[in-house]
Length: 410
Ligand SMILES: Nc1nc2c(c(=O)[nH]1)N[C@H]1C(S)=C(S)[C@@H](COP(=O)(O)O)O[C@H]1N2
Ligand SMILES: [Mo]
Image (cartoon, rainbow, N blue to C red; front, side, top):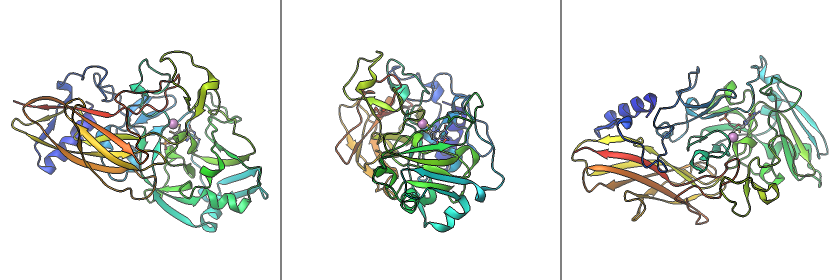
């Protein structure tokens, strides 16, 4: 248990008067396969960056940091607690955000180059609470290990975004009948420092681009975007892999075929159409692009590793659940390793593509060690598996049910 999460949670616990203290480090990792804490044993390296909370650093170059489960407890993700995922370097901050240019070209009747200031005033501004989730979220739950950043469940957040609808801008440019896909470009230099080629350039089918919650966003939680999250302007493509939500947005290329920029080919952001042997090489032609993210739940209170005072027989808990394009129907919890389940109360989302709060309680029959499991089911009836399923070489789509460890003292 890392120090930031521990102090934060115990402070909140004291305020709430429930008498919980966290001493996660004192608990052994749950049977290795079950541990879901962020590098529970050693404790992660914590991010030290102005304007950012002490997130768990998964990589320095490029910078990648995830949000510890207990820091995901806010209804609306505060900007400082939003995970960070860069593929290259961070570009320089522009001195004149309003003059920042965005180009829309390709399969359109009238290619546009528009300054951000004009974009803001010409198109209706909308504000929604929208999920941003890395396509690799949950990757660390795969066995054997899949290539890439070892996310637990913290490559996800749900801030409030303000921007214009991408659909409005595409309509202004006029889509040709040949328009089938987008290709997105940002200005971040590659890790090697090149600016002549994109670091990452993904795209989506036109239908997703025209969805009313797909935004060209310039504000987060009511403030200008910070540089690390894409200032002055980015895409927010909620519910789908975060790699579509291009930061430092400079160009949308409307394509007459599936986009083919870096991040579109091979095993990138793809999951198998039919299950493959875990650890095997796999065959590119059996892979399909990951679009909607899968159903997931995260217990955000109490923290993994919480120790409860002797005599505690009831534990209140809460968290968030979400499911890409879909809503959450139920979240169930278990304290007996999935033998019996109890339902929780699930709130409706603030709007489509926002996560949903669940809250409930479990009865603890005695003192001792427990794991609390949470399992969400979406509006299609799709539920989280007990273990990460559908292994793939680059590790997308792992969404096993969530587990925390609890000790009731005697
Ligand atoms: N230009 C650019 N946009 C990008 C990336 C990037 O490396 N460069 N990373 C993408 C990925 S993989 C994710 S998950 C999200 C993360 O957004 P955040 O860092 O604001 O949380 O940004 C996406 N947009
Ligand atoms: Mo990502």
